[in-house]
Amino acid sequence: AVVKVPRSVYAAIPGRNKYRPSQTSPIPKFTLAGCYTSQKFLGSMEGATLSGKLAAEVIANRAKGNADKPIKEIQQHIIAAASTYEAKEPVGVKGDGAIAFGGGYTVGKKEEDLLRESDPAQYAQKELAGV
Image 1 (cartoon, rainbow, N blue to C red):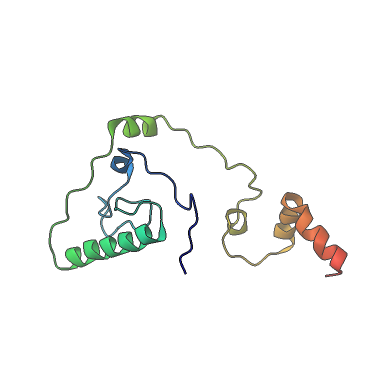
Image 2: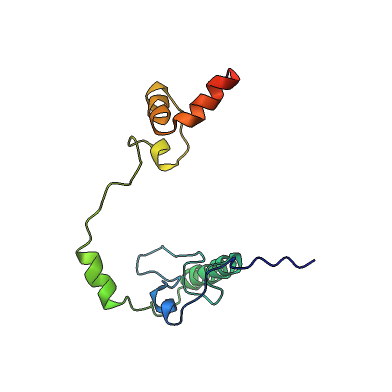
């Protein structure tokens, strides 16, 4: 059976690939992989898989002692915009622990209080169920 999902990936706009980073990075021992990187399948599982293969090739090439392939040029207007960027606090984040940013963590009383404040519906359902 063939399953067709209209609009399951975004429409590629010509010229946008120049903004996607290559798998090779100027940072030693740091290689990029993912559907957001420069490869032919763009934002899809196929693109992520191909990107992983390309990243593995970069790593294997470095392990052999070969020089890296050229890194894609970063667009000058991106560099200019980055130089004036001001970091902002994330919206809706309560606290500064790992749980606030979606990481694994053991929830203590302090963290539970923050969760109750930021997601009261989650606890209301448990209390109605008698948990």
